[in-house]
Length: 324
Ligand code: DGY
Image (cartoon, rainbow, N blue to C red; front, top):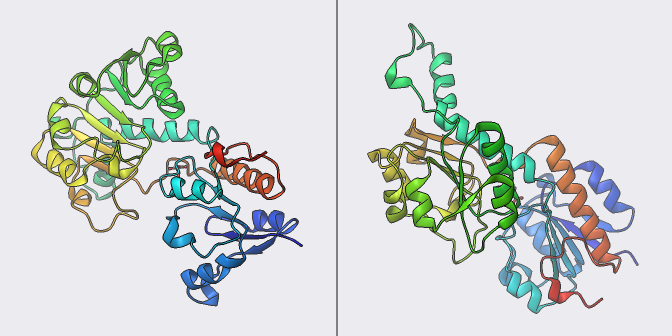
């Protein structure tokens, strides 16, 4: 008998067709009524789940007694209660590597956009405000040769650092749990404590995973350590930054600006950030290119299929549940 797969987001018709070759596939459909109801009804029959952007833990999965695998179409897995899944022997897989470069591109575009006020001045031009040459109140700040601080030198952090070092001649500082000697050798990157990095960097790029330890890693004290001329970029997860503290820092000029792709609550509801010309606000698009989203979907498909057919998936997060 075919196993059942429940798709909880971002599943294209093409992926649905591929899944249907091996599995019964349930895709909640807004035309058929309440999505949550359809999701909950499917849970007791579900062996595998695929998607992104949904919190899944004890409360949501209690009735999914036959669940074997959750295949997330994302690299980050802070939406899932890994402890609970592991306790139940449910595999969790993610999609590392395939989004590294596009997310780093986005990080760098936030650095550029914040420094050169690209989004703000685009809106200015389109609003018909360009009547004469731009003067000092609208000038930006240079990127080339400035110091780039990477908080969390994983794959994406390293890819942002490479862009900065090789493309923009930026000295690289980084902080994190461990020294990365390969990156130190490749890019001349220098290790700092977080406090030192915040005090020295012109651009601080957050690329750490969200955990209990990194929640509100950047709050009033940390923002106060940054240079008044510095820019904070967050392409990791919203809750790493204490958002009200950041808003206050942007309003009072504690730092120059921020480039944000992620927020404490997503989608970002009405927010004081919308009124701040020194904040660039994007709708969580780190991996949102056609090529990368396709690659992520393919990788998640492979992980799900392998797990349900009894093979070890390539990107198993909770390795300890694999019985081999
Ligand atoms: C991820 O994969 O974790 C990115 O944030 C895109 O959702």
